[in-house]
Amino acid sequence: MLARRPRIGRQRPDKHGPDSHGSGNHSPVNQGPDRQRAGGLVVCLGLAMLLSPVSQAATQTGARTAFDPLLEEHQSLWLQGGQPLTAPAPDSGASLAADLTIHAALDLPEIRPLLLRYSRQHPERVLHYVNRSALGLEAQYLQAPLTPQADLMISSAMGLQYRLANQGHALALEAPNLTAWPANSRWRNELYAMSFEPIVMVARRDALKHLADLDGLRNPLDVLRSHRDFWHLLETRREQLRGRIISYDPRRSGSGFTYAVSDARQSPRYWTLVRAMGQADARLVSTTGAMLEALASGEVDIAYNLVGPYAVTFARAHPELVVIVPEDYVLIQRRLAFVPQQAPHPEAGEAFLDWWLSLEGQRLVASDSQLGALHPEVRGEGSAQHMREQLGDALRPIEIGPGLLATLDRLKQASFLSRWVLEFEAPAPVVGETSQGQIQRQTPSATPPELNQ
Image 1 (cartoon, rainbow, N blue to C red):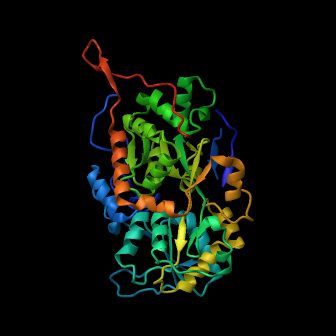
Image 2 (image 1 turned 135 degrees about the vertical axis):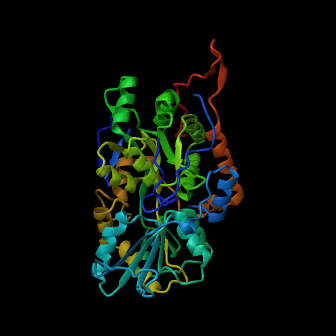
Image 3 (image 1 turned 135 degrees about the horizontal axis):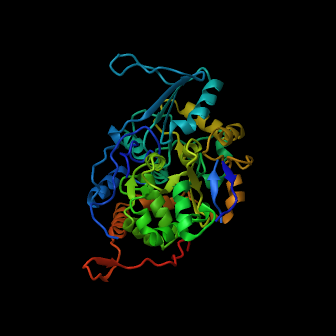
């Protein structure tokens, strides 16, 4: 999953639905609140929240457009014996009966090779995979939690998955590989971590070279190695980067909210970074895919807090981009899976999850995807163990436990988002006017705060 490199020192519409991270959905880009402003280790990689509070918080904090996760498009794949099946047209009256239905917030390009392998091994089963945004997935489930829908639920919205399991929506599982799964990668025998995904930054190589030239650095990759470096760029190169930064809007993205909360927990100085992004007129979107497309088109130069596997896959086809794992700390998201109590084929859902977490399945996860194999016996590229060997104490996995529930509290959500908007909208300090009557802004400090404290 990781390939070590030497340590060296205007946006299109968002084509991806809120919170899906990647492709398949369509919604407008939110370019931030309406306002006007003057103003080591580099590695190339080889929510947690209830729907209604998110929507309410977005409305209360000035999000431009409402988001209905039940209306977003989704990706769907039917398989039998490793071969795609054509789903009947909705108005044909015909239907396919699935023996295994998986609802997930996980883009098809990342999981397709593994679905194909499993389908070939079980040709007797008709497999139906549906990818939605994390918020859309949970909203669909919560709309009718007692109605049989999926045999397996997979989501990056760790907090909501945990809460659903904690409220009794998940079946207790007894398959051998599940009962043997490491305790820190599951909750009881109901909720299981399936991936180990770093949250990264991505930048255009030409932009880094330009910034390096301005600072007199020989190697462009020395420009951006950490959260600290990112803040420093925003403060000292604000004009060059104005409108050229892109990140998640935590008001419209459950995962974006999760990463923001996790960043704030890692560093009390996080708010200075949010303020710096706002003062540089950073653009806000709801998916990793939208950030990557804006980078590839040249509309922005640096993207912050992207899902690592999606970024790696995209960057392989776009050599003008470089994926950067921050050297000070690296958030690690783990997609969580459970078999719903009302699953129509619970044994099929459990069997798939048992296969995924088996030594065979985990070796395939490492070789056929960028999702990160968690099995303790899987080593080398594509494994969590390999990342630990390379990044050591910099890794910050988002823990599976009661702490996730704090991100679901409505009052805490509203408080956090209010603070986020306040910081993001804060203008650069005014220190006076020029002789021509123009506002003069405070010169940015060249000494960054300790963002990793």
